[in-house]
Length: 84
Image (cartoon, rainbow, N blue to C red; front, side, top):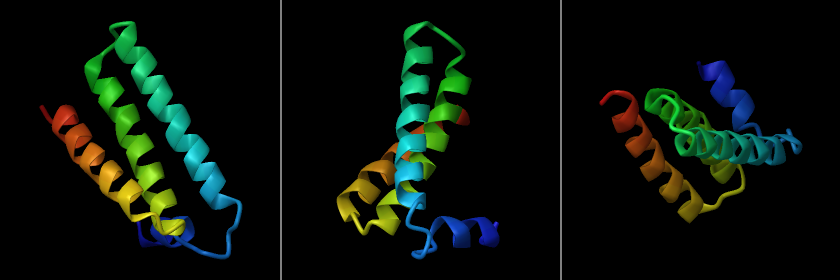
């Protein structure tokens, strides 16, 4: 787990932040689409969970505090939805 965190937060990997942002956006869009078509809500919250972790990693790497705060709150709500 620490190795994954080290790679995600490694400042020398310039390509990682855009990749995390794209991943966060795509998983968020996929979750919203599944919510729209009335798919399993548990699966939707799992996609949101992946999206939030990607955005949190990107916000830490790019030092964007309010983006971090927003996605940390979304992460908490996603966890509530998964374990509801």
